[in-house]
Image (cartoon, rainbow, N blue to C red; front, side):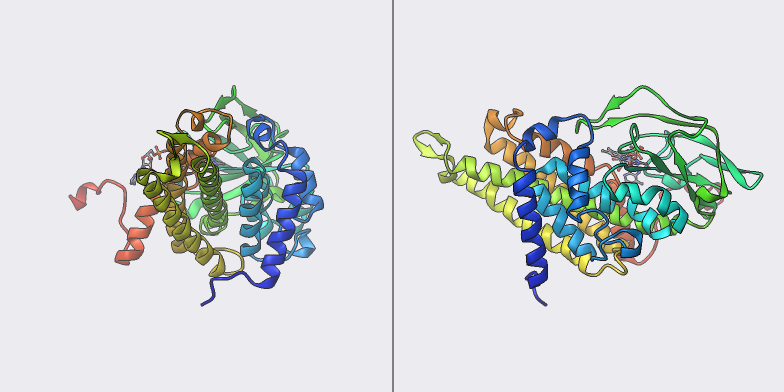
Length: 387
Ligand SMILES: Cc1cc2nc3c(=O)[nH]c(=O)nc-3n(C[C@H](O)[C@H](O)[C@H](O)COP(=O)(O)OP(=O)(O)OC[C@H]3O[C@@H](n4cnc5c(N)ncnc54)[C@H](O)[C@@H]3O)c2cc1C
């Protein structure tokens, strides 16, 4: 067992850091509060080879490993947290499912632009009545000629109001086995969106209405039976959220550390108070432990896809750790930590969202418990005959 990066990984990290220092350090605070997706950063990253890191070269990717993508997202986040969203969108999110399961024609039409930093894809899983219980989704795909008519409502999708295309979870038939996915471009007839609303993290979300939208056979990604594959691909997205939680926690920790070494109260530096030293010790232990869980999930990934168990443990731990660390960093900095003079409050708000998004901490713990006891525990009420 070796806890060190290989020379190639170190070289890659240093190159990413150099890029981030040159292009992203200036303006990091302003960028975090900017409403629009940072398209300028996306273009720069595409030129730098930071999009599609784990994807095949014939698909326009870089042919790297999941660990490489994690090194990239962590390193970018350490300099400009908001820009890590661009790494997520170009490597970990639904783009990864598209690269894994999309047809060559679908990749040509949608993936190329995403990897060029010119568009993004959003994933429509969540519905008003199907959140944690995602397999309860009601959006239907009904055969019509060679294609399907899609009817349903999706909520809470990241990038929803400007994504060029939506990877949409749909129901071709009953039960989990009836779930698959289609690609719906935002200009499709019957694709409508409600008024925008905001998450605490500053991101916009909209309700998307799919009103008898026609999807031709060329835009079907996974037919019925595709749910397992979709969720396996979704574990990559979860790992991106895991990595950002930890990286944002580290970012806030570093700011609080600097602060504690120069801010004086009662004639002493804050870092000299034992009450605060213990907070830092707890933060450091969480960062180190989370790092090991994250890297374990990445190193053990099969074909770039991490296992459900490793992902659940890493995400549940790092989501909580990232949030706790940002929260403590804010406390250590007092009133200043609560202002938008630094990115501590931004990291805090972002980390809070990842405790809910992409499999909430509770749902992940349910998954971990199933692994512990080697059996599944239905979350549904018992049927009358079982009572
Ligand atoms: C920042 C952000 C980004 C998001 N991005 C996307 C996206 O891109 N695409 C998309 O489709 N969706 C997205 N979502 C939606 C997200 O996936 C859902 O919010 C999440 O799955 C929880 O569903 P819900 O909000 O309906 O909460 P509910 O399912 O109603 O859950 C409410 C609470 O009950 C808990 N709970 C539910 N069931 C159980 C159980 N069996 N055991 C214990 N606790 C339980 C949950 O953990 C939660 O705390 C995003 C959400 C956020 C906050």
